[in-house]
Structure formats: structure tokens, C-alpha cells
Figure 1 (cartoon, one colour):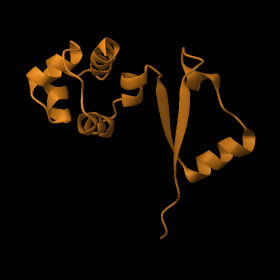
Figure 2 (cartoon, rainbow, N blue to C red):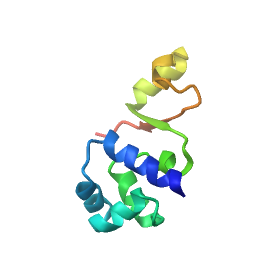
Figure 3 (cartoon, rainbow, N blue to C red):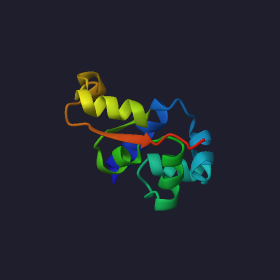
Length: 109
């Protein structure tokens, strides 16, 4: 449980957020946020879901495994798959990092 609090604080800092701002985003009080980061309380799923909607890597917070989500168009994804051009740059400094692609189909006009 202590690791979740530590990683939550790391993610907050990575996102450049204050304790108060992250609490607002998660729908909790600043005191509750402080308790989470000090590992005095365990965050609930609805709180973590709210943070995920704001771009926090909650999988990392809970499991310690970092993820990256790459958003791209359908055409770009197809080109990537066709050329098998996946760059090592996507992995940054962690070779065990999982990468997920969110692909959107073109809108029908």
C-alpha cells in the first residue's frame, strides 16, 4: 500500500499538479489526497477512474508498471503496421514499458 501512495505522488508531480488540484480532479478533499499520498488511506476505484480520465497513468499507480498510450489516425496506424516501423523511442528508458495504441477510424463525411 505504501508504494501506491508514493507512485500517486510521483504521477501528480509528473503532471505538474498541486495536491489541491489533483484532489479536485479526483473528487476528494485535499486532506483525503494527502492521506492517499502518505499511504494512510487506499484510493477507491471511482477516484482512480477520474484521474485516468485526466491523463494519469493509474495502472502505474496501482501496479508499478508504466504504460504509454499513443493516439493516431487510422491511416497512420495502418502505415505503422505496414512498415513495422516501431521505434525504440516509444520505450523511453524502460524496456518493460507496455505501449498501447488508441486508433480512431476516419469520420464518415
